[in-house]
Structure formats: structure tokens, C-alpha cells
Amino acid sequence: LELFSGLFLNLSSQNFQEIFTTTITLLIEKMVDNQNLQIIINTFLSYRQTSPLFATVMVEFLLERMDVIGSADVEKSNLYLKLFKLIFGSVSMFATENETMIRPYLQKIVINSMEMAMRAEEPYNYFLLLRALFRSIGGGTYDILYQEFLPLLPNLLGGLNRLQSGCH
Image (tube, rainbow, N blue to C red; front, side, top):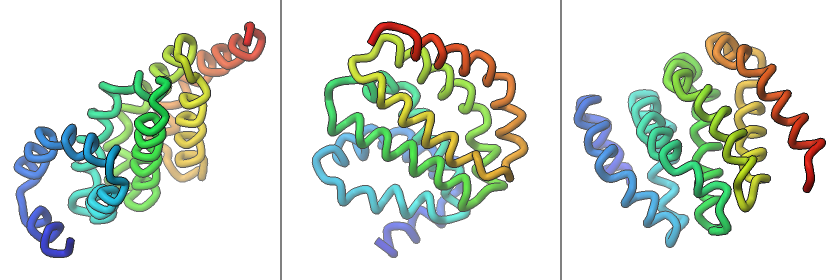
């Protein structure tokens, strides 16, 4: 693994991002069968040079497939939730780099979670995703993310109130 990660650490950012943009689908699909492959993701998220690049590739992959989180495929939805949590955790490890990385995706994560929770088979998973997001940025040190999140708060609270008073 050291040799593997060392090889990718020496790549230019463009090459690194291009390689993983084209192979992330295969990596994640293989992770469904073999959870031990998560060490690859943990490794790239734990290095300052690769963390924002790899997290960007993962967020884009997960956002395209957010509907899986609310599906009946428990293994995949749990894996996708875990991957989002790893990305959110990387923000606290490398706040400067990863806070700016996740900023453009924050609004899309929150809005998609609320919209998909309204029509998903398993809406609870979207609330788990939002909870993980809130916990990761709730420490009070992420001004950039707060500025992005604050305008979403009224609609988010309204949506949660509608869900609470709706039929279950």
C-alpha cells in the first residue's frame, strides 16, 4: 500500500484526478463486494496532497448516484453513506483544502437529500447523510461552509417541518 500510495502521490494533480475520475466507478463497485478496499480511499483522503483531489472525484461520483442512498439496496446505500462520512471527515483533517473543495457541493448535497427523502423507499438514509454533514461542519470553525449553508437553512427547516407533520 505504501508503494501504491507513493506512486500516486508523485503524479501531477491533473493526472491523479483524471486517473481516478475514470476508475472511481470500478473502485466503488468492487468495494461493495470487498469492504477492505476502503483502505485505498482512507489513504488518499489522509494525505494533504491527494485529499482534496480524491474527495472531489468521490463527491462528484456520489452526487450522480445519490438515489442509491434511498434505495432498498442496503449494502450499497450503507457504503455510499460511509463514503460521504469519510469525505466530511476529511474536511476536519485538512480544513483549508477540503473546506474549499466541498463548498461548491454543499448546496447540492442538502437540496438533493431533502428532495430525494420525499420520494425514496428509505428516506431515513438521507437524514443520516444530513446529520453526518451537520456534525462535520458543526464545530464552529468552517466559515466558508457556514456562509454557503446559511441561506439553505430556512428551506431545510421548512422541509423538515413538512416531513414531520406529513403522513408516515
